[in-house]
Amino acid sequence: MSSKVSGLLEKGEEEEEEEEEEEESINPTEVKMSQIVMPCHSNHQQELSVGQLLKWMDSTACLSAERHAGSPCVTASMDDIHFEHTIRVGQVVNIRAKVNRAFNTSMEVGIHVICEDLFCGRHWRVCHAYATFVTQRTNTGKKVILKPIVPRTQKEQVEYSVAAERRRVRMVHDDIIKDLLSHGAIQHADNSAVDDAVAAERTKVESVELVLPPHANHQVTTFGGQIMAWMVNVAVIAASRLCQAHPTLRTIDMFTFRGPSQVGDRLLLKTIVNNTFKNSMEVGVRAEAYQEEGSNRHINSAFMTFEVLDDHRKPRVLPRIRPEPLEGERRFQEAIARKKIRLDRKYIISCKQGEVPLSVPWDPRNQVYLSYNNVSALKMLAAKNSWRLSSEKNKVRLYTLEQKSMLSFRVESEVDVPAQRAFGLLAELSNRPSWDTHYQRCELIHQVDDDDFLYRVVTPSVCRGAVGCPTSASQGEGILQDFILLASKRMPCSHGDPYVIALRSVSLPTHPPTEHYNRGEVLCAGFTIHETQNNMSLISYYNQASPEVIPYISTDIAGLSSSFYHIFCSCSQYLTKNRLQCVSQATNTDSHT
Ligand code: COA
Ligand code: ADP
Image 1 (tube, rainbow, N blue to C red):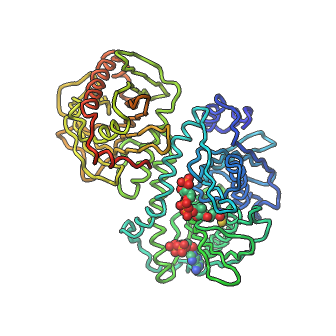
Image 2: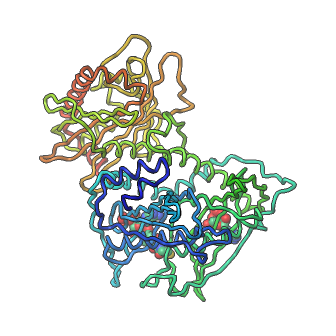
Image 3: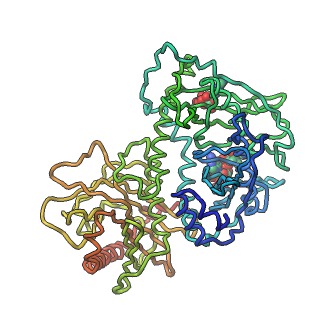
C-alpha cells in the first residue's frame, strides 16, 4: 500500500496502517491488484458483486502463492470473511496479497481489500481474508515442497507466527463443527409454523454451470474464486426470494475445496435459505461437479449470512422461515448452532487484542477460538520489537513493554536443559507450586484435548489489582486469590519456532467466584522456549498487566524485578534438577505438530 493511503484511511484503521508504513519493505511474495468497478462488475444496485470481488481476491492470492512456489497452486480453503463495506461502481478496489507462511505443500496467504473513492480521496477497509493454497503435483505426481518464508518485519513475524495457530484451527474446523452439531450443541428453537412464515422451498435454487477454459488455470483446474463467485450468485437469488428485496452479503464461513474441478465439468449449485434470524439469514450452498458420465463429486459447501438494509442502511427485520420437513428442519437447527459459533468466533477472534474481555466464559463451542486467542495473544506479545531491558542480574533479564494502557513483562534466561524437556516440565502446570511460591495450589479441572487444559490456581492474596501477576513483590494480608486458567501448550510447527505455553483467564459456571477467594484474572501470560546451542533453552516468561494494575506495579519495578529474579532462579533450578527424563516421557512429547 502506498504510504499516502494511511493518512486517508478511516479512524481506527489509520493506526494499523501507520504501523505497517513504519515497517514497509518490499516483500517478494506481495502482489497487488487494482480494479475500477465498472457496471459489468456490479449488481442492479450499482454495487460490486461479491462474487466478482472473490474472483479478484482469489486471483491476487493465487499469483502471490505461485510467485513463492514457482509452480502452479490451487485454493484449498478460505477462512471466514466478514465484509465491512459495499463498493460502488466508479470506486476502485485495491487488493494486496502476500504469503504469510509456507508449511510443506501448503501456504497461508493474507489478503487485504481496500476500497478507494477517487473523487473524495477516501479509503475504507472492505475485508481481510486468509486463504490456503496448495502446490499442484508435478506431471510425474510428485509433491512440490515449498521453501520457507523468512519474515522480515515485526508485522510479518506476527503473521508468520500466528499462521501456525490458524492452520491448526483450519485443520480441525470441519470436525469441530460436525461434532458440535451432532453433540447437542443445538438448542431447539421454536420452528412451529408461524402464520406469515415463508416456506423454505420458495427460496430453493438449483443451477448448473459449464466449466470453460476461461474459468480455469493453464492446468485446466477451475479457479477457486470462480466457484466461490458462482456459489455467491445462487445464494443471492435464494436470499432475494426470501426478502423480496436486495440482500447484502455480510459473512461467508470458512470453507474448503474438497476436491478439484476441471474444464468440461458441469458444476451443480444447490442453495436454500436454512434459517432466518431477526436481522439476518443463513443461506447454504452446495457445489457438486459431474461429467457426462459418472457420479457427482462434492466440491464445496458454504454458509453465508445476508442482511437486508433499509433506506438508512440499517438491517431490516426479516420474515420467519418454515423449513422443509426432515433435512430442512435439521438445517434449520444447525443454522442456529452455527450462528452461535459465529458470534463466539467474532467475539473472541475478531476483537483486537486487549479488547477481548477478560474471563470469557469457556465452553466446548468456543474452545477452539479461545485457545487460538490464548496462543496468538502470547505470540503477538512475544513478537513486539519495542521491549526495553529494565534490569539484569546473573544473566536473568527483565524487559518491559509499554503499549497504550498495557504494561507487559518478560523475564528471560538461558537454562541448561533441552527445550523439549523444559517444555514438558513447564507445561505441567500442576508442578508449578513446587517451584513458584506464589502458586499455592494448582488443580487440573478439565483436560480439553492433548494440548489444552483448564486449571484452578490459588495464590496468596496480592495488593489489590495485582492481577495475574504471580511474581508480584507486594503480597498483602487477607484472603487468598484464585484464577481459572486456560493453558494451551504448542510444540514448534517447524524448525526455529519456539515451544509455547499460553495462559489466560476464562470463567467456568462450575467454578464461580466464592467469598473465600478473590477471583483474579490473567490477561495474557506464559512461556516461550527456544532451543539454543549445546542443547540448552532460552526460556522467556511473559505477563501482560491490565490497566488497573499498572499504578501498583510501576511504582515498584525494583521490588518486582527482584521478585521475578527469585522466581526465575527457582524455576531454573527446578528445570535443571529434573533435566533427566525417563524414555517414556520423552517419546510422549516427541512428535512435532
Ligand atoms: N485447509 C487448509 N489446508 C488444507 C486443508 C484445508 N481444509 N486440507 C488440506 N490442507 C493442506 C494440508 O495441511 C497439507 O499441507 P502441508 O503439505 O503444508 O502439510 C496439504 O493441504 C496437502 O494435504 P494432503 O493431506 O496431502 O492432501 P489432501 O488429500 O487433504 O488434499 C487438497 C488437499 C487441497 C490438495 C485437495 O483437497 C484438493 O485437491 N482440493 C481441491 C483444490 C482445488 O482444486 N481448488 C480449486 C477450486 S476446485
Ligand atoms: P448440510 O445439508 O449438512 O448443511 P450440505 O453440504 O449437504 O450440508 O449442504 C450445504 C448447504 O447447501 C445446505 O445447508 C443447504 O442450504 C444447501 N443445499 C444442500 N442440498 C440442497 C438441495 N438439494 N437443494 C437446495 N439447497 C441445498
